[in-house]
Length: 474
Image 1: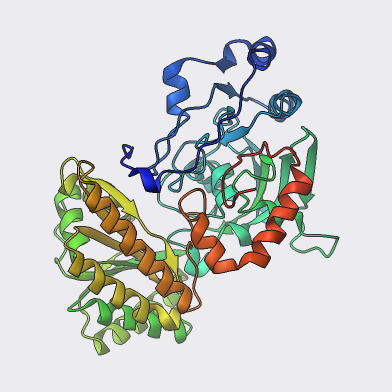
Image 2: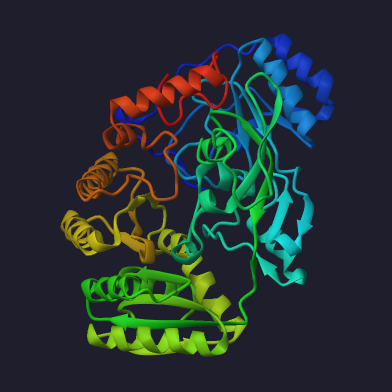
């Protein structure tokens, strides 16, 4: 967990609302021991993986059903007290912090698979189940859910932040893979959006409205997801490059030629060194692409050979295969642990992460200039990216005892986002806006779009109790 290191001028604006004792008493009467005011529990639910320090919520309600969530929201609405949904706490942008006080609704106990419809390639789950939990439940049907943000995040949180991850280049993001939702509104009403049908033209697309709303328009209590057949064959491949530009140009060529690659991850030489030390691997300490191919044995072989040929044109070398499940798992686990490898490389440090995404044709322009700025700053960093869809992340490693390092890292992030927006990209490819990117969103979307978002928010949540202070100010 990232310890708070926020300089005062970068701290989120706090506007704490009173939580009347009568509300706490009502919650305790309804939920008994499942409503906790213990300091340790409140603090656990008042932190995520961001760098912000905010007072914890006044109470935590552990919901076990949709009715529990509805009752908790109804009680909070009576007193106009904020409610903040909580899954596993892995968000990166301050999504679950109680910047206006209130209560946390923990849905982690709502972790059941409600139905598997293998013939239709869908599954309906509660929000507290994690992505690995879903895959464990459906693998016996020969199916899998591909969205993989790295952390074993909850499906509710992934839906709320419109998450994606390593497989997005082939399978899309949560936006494309959520079919229907059950949502508790700000008034405590339970509504349903969407169906299990693959398409619909019935009215406003409320499912898409809720996906990515970060808990500001409703509390998600049920999600229907698309599933996919497990590939007949899966092969991973690694390839080293003399420069980042060579690796990026390879990726651009692969995507523009239409090779249906499933995963394509860039790991820079700094990060390879950190990952080798952390995961006891022997990867060549050069800039590195980690790729995965799905399909029939013949198509997987054809895809990999095509990519190998393209990589060779850009100086790629040491192209190696990983076909056994154990070897693939070892490589992808090392990739997912890159954050922890980086943290361990500089004892006592904290990481400030970035999350830009640009059109694939502009990836080299954005990434190479950003690398040059990071190198010139003197701040240690790691660089990983789902570059197959133009998304990449810097992690700037700062000393929490040196505010000037935090300032430098934030300045680098500002320049990076400005560059991405100039190249018609976005300030966040998958982490969401939360607290950290509120100003970036205004610059990206414009005042008119923010005004429209505020209008929707006020209409659905007139008392501003649903995760207030996130995405934009009201």
